[in-house]
Image 1: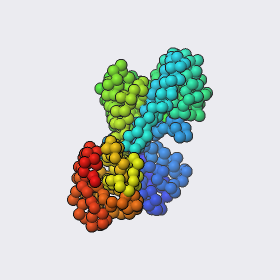
Image 2: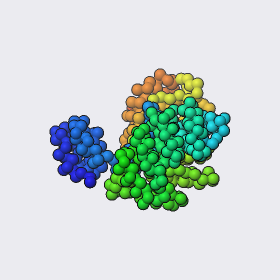
Image 3: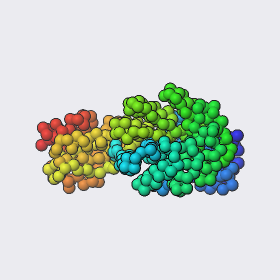
Image 4: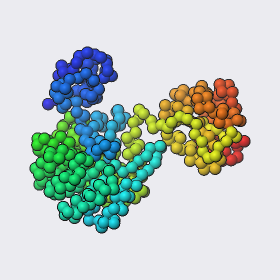
Length: 445
């Protein structure tokens, strides 16, 4: 049974030190009871109290970790149903399958393709998180041979996909130190898979044909001592998946139902690649913690990764770029100088247009706390004063001799005051980034 705020308060230091971010220990206890704070925020709590409060402080959706070292992946740990309520902590991990039935050359090529798959978007470097080794052959020997080849090439976190407990155990003898996820335990093999998971101390995925069966085997797995679980309710259709995933998330968050308070794993499989994208994006939105794909096609991966990046960007912490003076092409003292904000999307919208102009150009990026141009101007984060300070900080006067700066057209109202504050001539550029090439070619002089 969950502890009340007063139950938790009795186990806290009662020093009201405010180190946790709350004004009093009682306030912190109430936040813990409502799952709005983490026990780790209290630096002075005793080990005995930690153990007693473990159940109360665990997030409604447990955090489960896979992999090791730099390739460690965490999923779960969520405390809200919708991102705008607070934030999501761990983005859905993306795994790509490797079938153990592939010929040796094809197998190695696929592993290397997974390793090489990467994307750059708004300044973030994105790669595939995990490899899912699938025991399609039903052969222990082929499964282990494929695992050996993966381990020789990749250090990514692993998912071992087989319902054969013997195959899983043989694989774990080679890779247990990498803490793979074993997938999956069913009603038929639950005892054997739980024993393997306990012996090798790895997380276990549970697979069922519906929530009732999943609830039953989750209780059995938890009672056997397995703490790190991942859930697969085995939906047959997209509609069933949406309903099941939403119910699991709501039971964990709204009802504090610990039996199903674990991350979800989903398999987005379909012969039609557009259906794969549709399924995967639906799963990420509602509410998978780990998604397994068969496709490595960029036109499949990119929309999925883009959606995930958008959902798991902290709404309270916009993605930003470093404020500084950037140069594009062989610039000199006569090159044009533009200014913008450090909102990542703004930066990566403007820079391709500068490059497309083929004119060597400087771009001065001011710290606007991650706001776009108009938003920063309205919030008084992109002002004549801040632009002038940025010009001085990054020695714009030493970079160009003409003392002219081009501001975005949407904030043309700043021009007069910026001229007064900086002593520079201020030119009003285009409102849209798409107008930059034409402006630099035809207007700049």
